[in-house]
Length: 156
Image (cartoon, rainbow, N blue to C red; front, side, top):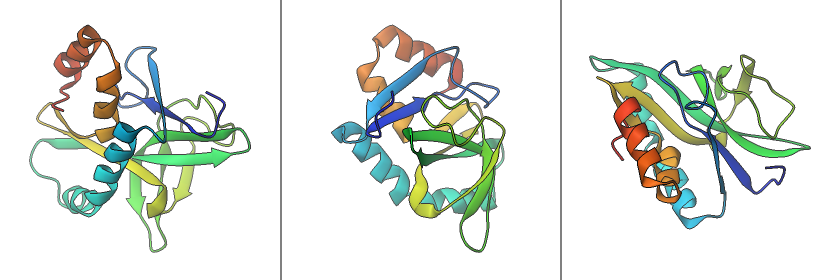
C-alpha cells in the first residue's frame, strides 16, 4: 500500500465516514477495470454536480473521491461534505488515510476537478455512482459483494 501506483478504495458505510467494517480494498491505478471506472466517473461528473446542486427527493450523502498525493504515495479518499469554489473544490476527508500522511480524517482540503476520481450519493437507500467501488466488486468474493449490495444498496 506504499506505492504511488496503488489505489486505496475505502467502501462507504451507512454513516459515510469510513469503510464498511474494517475492510480496505486496493487496486492498482493502471487496472483496466479501475481505469474505466475512473473515466466513467469523470465523464459523468457534470451530471453529478447538477444533481448535487438540485438534489432529487430522497437523495443525500453526496461525496467525491479525490486523489491525494504526498511523499508517501497516492491514495484516493472520500470527501464529504464538499462544495465548489471559484477555483475548484473544498471538502472534508471522511476516512482514515492508509498511505498518505499529509491529511487526516476530518481535515478540510482544497482540490481541483482533475483530482476527482469518483463520486457518489444515496437515493432512497440505493447507492448512485461509486464506480470505483463497483469495479472492486469484480475482485471480491461473491458473498462479500452480496453483503455490500444488501446492506448498503449498491446496484452495480
